[in-house]
Image 1 (tube, rainbow, N blue to C red):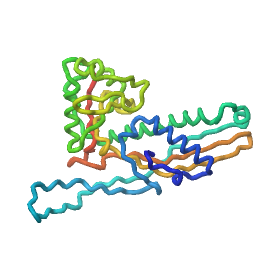
Image 2 (tube, one colour; image 1 turned 30 degrees about the horizontal axis):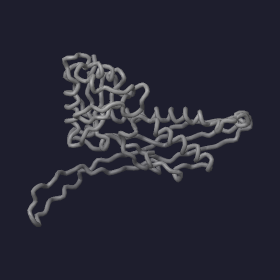
Image 3 (tube, rainbow, N blue to C red; image 1 turned 120 degrees about the horizontal axis):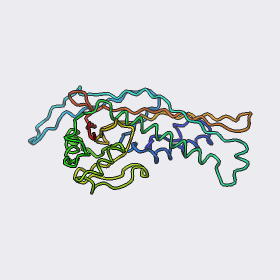
Image 4 (cartoon, helix red, strand yellow; image 1 turned 90 degrees about the vertical axis):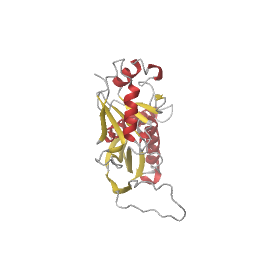
Length: 279
């Protein structure tokens, strides 16, 4: 995914591989939250990636002045991939009657949507795993509270990483667009547009809508430090059934992990969650 999935990672016939590549490509276009994650290949389903935590910077060094190397500040991302399974099927009658192209076309669109929805749920769950947390200064439905203040505090929690996204539920977005301070920044229809629906000026946060996160909260984070998707192989089984048709069973191995860059309290350095955003 995101360049990490290719034909060599797909096990099956050439016909099956073509179906899967089409399905996965559509899934990534439909997915809402994939751009917020890094990608890592995990071809053997299990693996551990060591991540070296920054040890600080040496400044104003003189000529030939050396600096110390601090070791041992490692955190680890351990993967144990499970599979998402989906099935496609086409009858002999559908193939014979089809005059408009691939009879699997609509099924692939629907399957891509289902896979994208499940992946977005995994990402939302991962981003809410041990985030840094803070409470809002006041409900966004109260016009006397400026939501930008809460967002700025959340951006500060993510430092030294630069926050570049905020995830809101549909209800929270409704309060954001109705607030006197922020109504002018709200554009787009979260029901019709996938991905970024708006950008908050000054803070330069891309706004994503997801009802998979906890109600009455928002997530602010850095897409380079928030979560990583472990992409495994894809197994396709094709069966020509006696009842008159073909079935493709597609197993997609993947896992989303977060909290690999940790604060001193073992919280996710790349994500901050604000609670009680709306009443």
